[in-house]
Figure 1 (tube, rainbow, N blue to C red):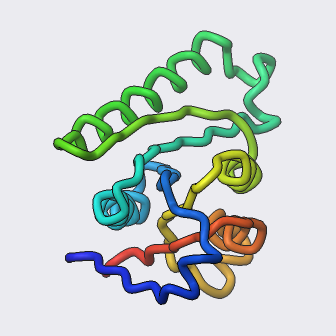
Figure 2 (tube, rainbow, N blue to C red; figure 1 turned 180 degrees about the vertical axis):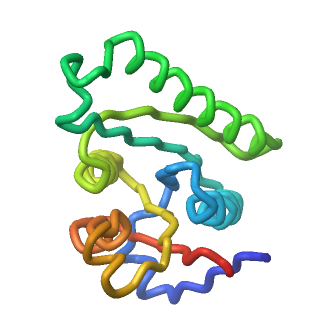
Length: 159
């Protein structure tokens, strides 16, 4: 799919240039689909592509519950390895790719990162849950869209 943008001259004067595409990944098919679009946008805009994974340790992740610090380090290393593998697959002339592994509440961390990154845009996958499943599981994409102050593109999982 080719990405093409047409922006009027009057709109251009009020827009900050997009210099970084931030693509949060949870390593699901939905985020892989979003990554494809993020790559196309980064190429079209000449922007850097930053792959981000945010992990959250729940209250059940305390050592007394069986989650040791060694195990947490293993999980972090596995997440970084997955980010590095995704990054390596994207390497091509002219496309700058970086990775970042962060801890915290995913929607909050993603929004904060984007707000602190001048010229950023978010591209993230949406699982397309509706009804009861969305109510019970929540939607990181929905929370990000509601809170973000930067442009956000959500990419629905192709069926």
